[in-house]
Length: 164
Image (tube, rainbow, N blue to C red; front, side, top):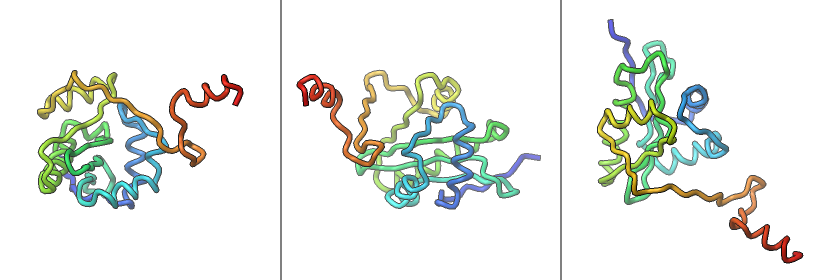
């Protein structure tokens, strides 16, 4: 008999279980940006786009975060419990987020996959996504860990070299 699961909108009540899943899922990079407060803000700014999958016993077996910027959709932290992979859960989570993004008028969606996450890359290719070799992701801290504005790269070094 096939195991059953239910997909529903991700709520902050799902956070602890989702975070625990992300922690044990290879290919998921977690940081301070994934704090409860930050995920609550993310969900508030992007209602109806992120989903979880729960088994018949109520345990969380999958999760995906999704957002849009008015032009494109983005998926983050798509994960399925290792013992539940291959049952279509990840595919259905993605399908629900993509449908919700389409309802918002998004015509394209992007994902960020760690370069060494071969299993993740195989999953995304299998469900119709293609790698873009013409784009390089660049990042920069906007807020320093102490809560202040992060300096531009190299700024602090130049000041100290100039004696200031």
